Amino acid sequence: MALACGPEVCLWLVAGISGSVLFWLAQVVAGSGTITEFLGQQIVAAGGYPARLAPLIGWAVHLGVSLAYASVLAVFVVMVRRAEVPLAATLAFVAALVLGWVTAFVAPPAISVTIALLGGQGFPTTLFPFNTEPGLPLWNHLLFFIVSWAIQALGPRWVGRPRRAGGGNNAA
Image (cartoon, rainbow, N blue to C red; front, side):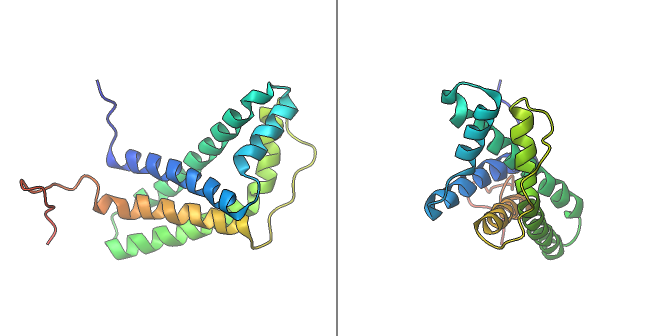
């Protein structure tokens, strides 16, 4: 029996996973350390876990956060979808930009909490400071949410649309 999912769920999964990979690739291309590597190493060190688990832990956390981010945008996309398509797409795009900025701003303290909790240390007494600088973290978060927007807000126009018998789509 195949696992079935509605178009919104499939688009959310595609957005979260592809966004997380794109986020990571942007860090690799920029020559900076990657979030997966940093999180994995920090959580392993804080929790005393075997070092060989660092890549798995880093990717699991990164994918989890990416899917959570994509789900926040998905809720907004679903909320505005009854509006005319241009308005709905614009509202969702503005939400994506706001979410990109907000998540980049709060990412450092959230990373502090994530490392401490998953490392078994409890809530940390000190947090990394908020990110107030424009730079790779901000652009990467904006890129993630713009890709997620494109997949989730524009994707339904191409996913699940009936096809003609000859294989073409029904759009004129």
